[in-house]
Image 1: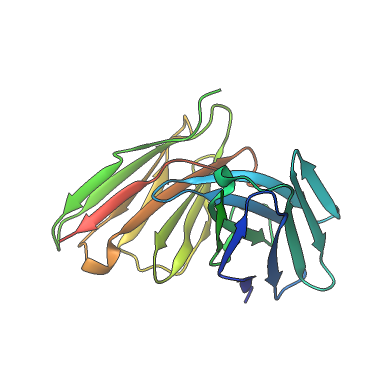
Image 2: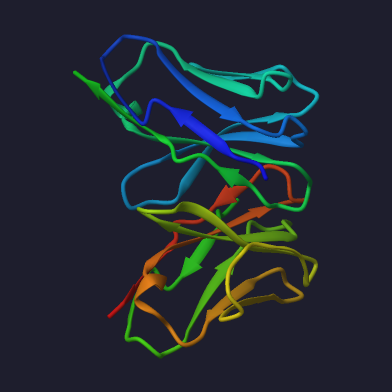
Length: 112
Length: 111
């Protein structure tokens, strides 16, 4: 059974610092890994999708890496801003049938 | 392009009642997935539909059911509501079941 873990559960950094968020999964036979952010009481916003054949994806200040053999993904957010404060979730799927297994998330607070 | 829409946004029901939630995917997307989010259990997969067929199902009791229409809109139904069904219900759409785009959710409160 696939299990997804995100450590730490919470993180507080001053504005301008780089953020490093970790995600680990137990079954390396993944199809896709996707990173999301969630603001309180809201839905999820897709940040980056990494397909199993890819090692990393980049979008603006965000960069996500994937190491299937070690069962890890890391999300880097450069030069954090207070608007980056949110809960960040990673999710993996082992097929193309839309069933994602989510981690519990990392709650990030960026202080001005 | 319009995003995923969910209706209603908020619902209050009492134990024993049933509820129907609706999800309209992004235009052109044929896959719709449903998730339940609670503080204790996090995000849990309910089921996924593609072209009106349920392709995948999570570990929820039979009180939770869903369907998808020919226009890809989807509904989920929960019968005989229990207090533990109080949650944020999220729907996600994708073109083939790959990158997921989520709606704002329906907040269900069971009293």
